[in-house]
Image 1 (cartoon, helix red, strand yellow):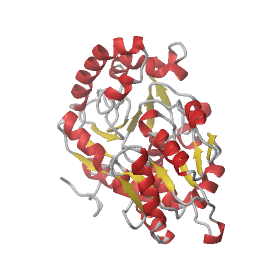
Image 2 (image 1 turned 90 degrees about the horizontal axis):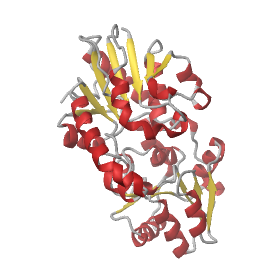
Image 3 (image 1 turned 180 degrees about the vertical axis):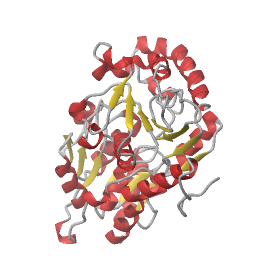
Length: 372
């Protein structure tokens, strides 16, 4: 088969790009299409493939300001020539599924989430935007929603990265989606002996408003307990201003520093609602429990009372209560490690390959992947 993979943009290595890496391993001869490509920040695994960009990549400052060109991306996708491909895979959380494959190609959309800024998180993005952006958002979002629903009709099969995202696909596109959780490199993390654990909690990931890192900082300020924060993002400066003496804001750090803190913290604090959430799985692979908001993808990975605890509302008081509840538990690190293995990369590869082969008539479906 000739395979084309469409990924929204290639400007960093986050969760979506880790999925793309795994797809590259399944289809080593696939061609990749994307709106914007910065090879300096993309892994060698992805760079081995032929990568073609849309006209967005040639626009001024596209590698930094690509989101400003969002209204042009539907047109850019529809100009891509996908004739001759047998299988088209769109990797979607920004616009990518709106391509026009040539019949009889099969189009599978692996959906990390329908575009948050026009669907489930539109109001949050609107409230935190500047005056000019707020003026432009309503008509642009209306146009993009209309196009996005039309684009969904071009997809033969949806795969969602979690039950949470499958529900959004059903709500916004009126389509069913199979669920295949994204790959996590669990082998990159190891627990340490109990004697090597340290007296601090950890929050890690991108520091943006919808992830609610401010809740964790304010909660640990009140408790006067130690919290280490690793990650960069738009809220970094604000968090440094509000952090008390027991909260250490480290900013973005190399991977080995993150590994070190995962393995030695008392627990990971995860206050946001994520589509799936790779960070809690990485913490569990390091043998550490997770204190998470009880909505979104974390509810599908963390096992309450066994590998962590949930808090029901996003408030400082609820975070404090969850920390206190966890402190009274005697959780086995081996349970966290075992749970993380359910999301290892090889599981994703086996499930995706099997399901795609089934859809294209290349072979039987893997036992653990059920057809609705």
